[in-house]
Image (cartoon, rainbow over all chains, first blue to last red; front, side, top):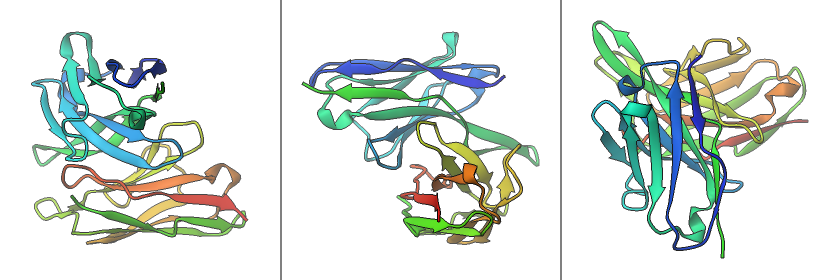
Length: 126
Length: 113
């Protein structure tokens, strides 16, 4: 079964650092882009960025560039989202999701997020 | 960034009736070389992660009931639930994956009237 399993809920203070994880299984991890999506309390979905674990190529939304860092360790099929100095406004659920891909006329095309992790709740409060 | 705008923000529909959600992109999400619209619809129920329903604007994901359908082209797209069931109560999001960042609409909350 293809799945993404995220690390557990975190409660942190402003200014603290944090790294949350997303472990893929049931597929060849290095060959699929993985994305991170933020959902603030009671709000909608926000695309933060994606990473290709095969070569760590990373693309960020301008809204999140410099706010958090996306990385991956292909040896353990795990993607990460980390902050060096958390703010109260980072309080949210963070989802990782795998980008679908298909072969069309010999070319790989990237699709929607078809596999989602269960989410990691991050609470930042003094 | 491509801006995705959904309408309405919420709607209440009687069981068995049709629900229609619209999504407009600020620029075309049609990729000319493969003639595909890079547009997806997701369903999110309370306390759960989003679930992919429709991709390529009109292709249902495996296992999605056929009462869900997607249509549209260019910049205007529609998600239709042909006969609303109780289990369809959720928030629905459109997303473009034509370019990064892969922006989402603001969401449409569907409830039972």
